[in-house]
Image (cartoon, rainbow, N blue to C red):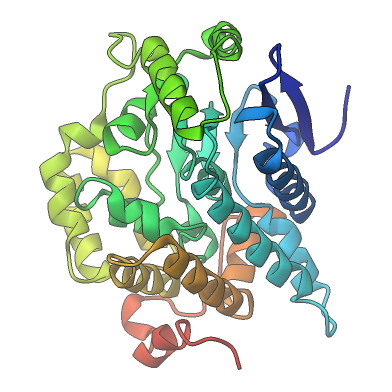
Length: 362
């Protein structure tokens, strides 16, 4: 069994083939570390320039999921180790991760993601920018950074703002987990293919008549994806986002996290579906919630490049603040699930502290 954190191969016959990358840290639920970012970046650049590669597939090994996100536990272990270089790994990880995310958004050649099970945080950073995004049954998609005192990075300010009204803000501030039907309804994924059909679907992909014309290849892949899309299948889970669309629009458009929490709690009195997001926002980092709310609003009209530039500013600030290391400690390292946030409520967070997150480090 190959223990490399990312596996690479080429599939198909003839002069035009498909490059395939598979995330392979199964025990860590394919948590993305700096080594994986560098391996993916190097190989994707190579394949983009290789005239014999018509398209790229990204998927993941293991039954549990595509990726649980960035390996922030390692980032914070480096911080907790102390010393003058304690931020070096985290700074490098975030910077290079965002460059990789941008590359996928701007790849040019067809970039096809097959996502199954858990796909959260940094995993969504890898899949959101793909030109063709396929999701399987029993999926759990989320941006859960609020739980660890972080903000929805990896371009979240770009792709979350393109979801149905209110949904992106609620996902950002509550870590709301959605299913495959929700993900397609919201536009985060493009097609549904049951995981047991992936091999046959990919085999069909390798038989397409690719050329050196990228636009032609995109059309071929789009037609192939539609041919295999089973998102109208009755066996799919129901979309909760479409069911609660009006309520989510109202709650997500509130002018502050405080108001959002009040509206979520009010909705939970009538419908238990709202209890989980209400508790998540209530228990999450107040500072992270306020920064994330301002971040999504600030990014509403921004380009991808502008969003990712701001992501790096914010990530470096969070790395040096109190709540992010504490949240990772509580959830992922010590696992006591009892984070001691710097501020206990929204009201205690000074406005100037929120604003300081948006100023680049000197």
